[in-house]
View (cartoon, rainbow, N blue to C red):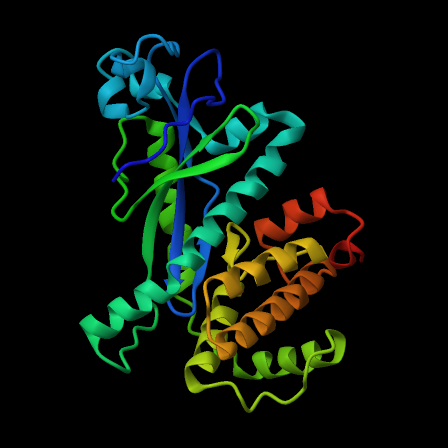
Length: 303
């Protein structure tokens, strides 16, 4: 794998860094995924020097490389410490990271669908299955995020106590998210009725396949415990520009008309969920909370 080198990384105290973001994928096709706030930042041990490309501890942020010079707890920040460090730009940067990871995952949906079809055969289903991924992100000098790589088996065993505590919190929240056995069929039916009345979409849903209905039911179960998660996909969208951006990506990826139709329904359901939580009817996920802080005058954020 060859990647272009980022010439102008954002630096903190003249040191290079990247972020390890933890996400969970609970459905591959159609995609459903969330981001957990307990990620961390990894610093290079030495100050950044463009003229000395041979010094790994100046360029690389791998803890295994740098902890020979500096203890791990001095090489890492918790993600919320970094967002706080950025001040007024922090939540805007996080919003861009959430969007970038969500869109990156969506581009893989068709590929993974074909892979599962070849390996598992038609009709394979796995309810309550999930995968935790570690996404490495770097920022340029203008705070634009770039995804470096995705780790399918991210380490959860840290020498820094603060990171071990965050890993425990991550797994606690995964358990709450996944293991909810409440029947949500009546609630889903009411939500579909409400969406058809408020979002000006068709009120006839016979086109939904069994798999689509199962997806919606599992999504409803997960929504009961989203207070510590950011929704990556389906995304929470506030403006027409955001909707157009996601719609353009769907078309660029050449999804079927049925999948595009389902995407439109998911966006409408996300909008309804945001309205409900802003109105105090349910707990808000973190993406709705920060989106409303960034877009306080949007329709979704008006009580």
